[in-house]
Amino acid sequence: MKFPEIPENEAERLKSLYMMDLLDKKDDERLDRLTRLAKTAFNVPIGLISLLDRDRQWLASCSGQVDVRETARNISFCAHAILAQGIFIVKDASVDERFHDHPFVAGEPHIRFYAGCPVRLPDGSIAGTICIIDDKPRDFTPENINALLDLGAIVEDEFYIISMAMTDPLTDLPNKRGFYKLGEKRFAWLTDNKRSFSLVYLDVENITAINEFFGHSEGDATLKKFAGVLNRCLKKNDVAARLEGGKFVVLLGHDEDQDVDTFLFSLQSKIDDLNEKSMKQFRLHYAYGIVEYDPDRYSNLLEMMNNSEHVMYLERKKSAMRPTQSKPSREKS
Image 1 (cartoon, helix red, strand yellow):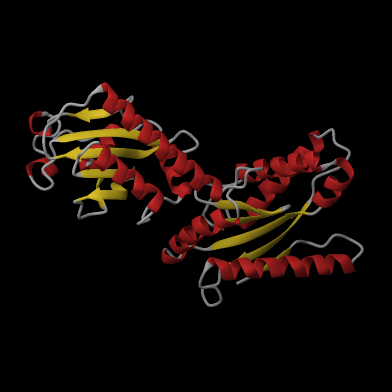
Image 2 (spheres, rainbow, N blue to C red):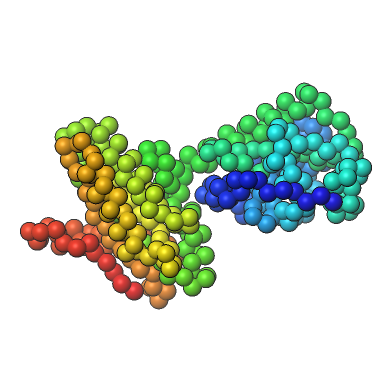
């Protein structure tokens, strides 16, 4: 048996897959109807949509006699398929030197025929495949190839719809829904591994004035610039989102290279540089509040989110009472 190779852009591919939050989800009717259609259209016993994680294959949708939802990646036919240009076809696995001694060929489900079409996420990264499997050898005609390509395009359309439902269209950051979906997984990992982390709640304070005096197109451009700067300050596993208006939030893990102070220093430095180079009649400025994780107070991300908004409200109230700008608020655990 020949093990599949790893794509050259594997790190970027996995990051895109994780950001879409498609793994470990079951019974998505939008995907299930496509595997049912594939199974019927090609008259095969099995139709699948698979996603290739770091070390495993997750079956996002299964139609037919399939008893598992995940397998090891190194024995996945689909891990070979994502490397192919176009449709990956195995006409008879029992005589194919790559697969003849494969456990799913020698044993259940006794794969003989396989055809897989790589499917991409909205940013172009390959997530996995839509594939069909038969326990009998068979040919695959040009018409069959075109039909499977069409099904692959429809899967990609569904990925796009899922992405849009979790993405802020102005900044391309996750929206509130996307932040909760992605952030809860990150929250669980950080707490399970006993890592320290913070929630940073940011507000572009003068966005209302920019919209009023310079127009909404200028306001939109300002928010896009702020989001771009914010994104450049994040480390790989940090999660940032635009909640609404000029409000943003970051779930920030602490490590030796970055804690909340170094993040905020980096953000302010980049905003200062942006303002210095700007030819605009206004300067971008923002406020922020910080909530540090306390296991005795917060059992989930939503509780931290609610408290960070409270911290921001109190800070604004204090700022309004003083003639000079206060230091940003911070709640320590």
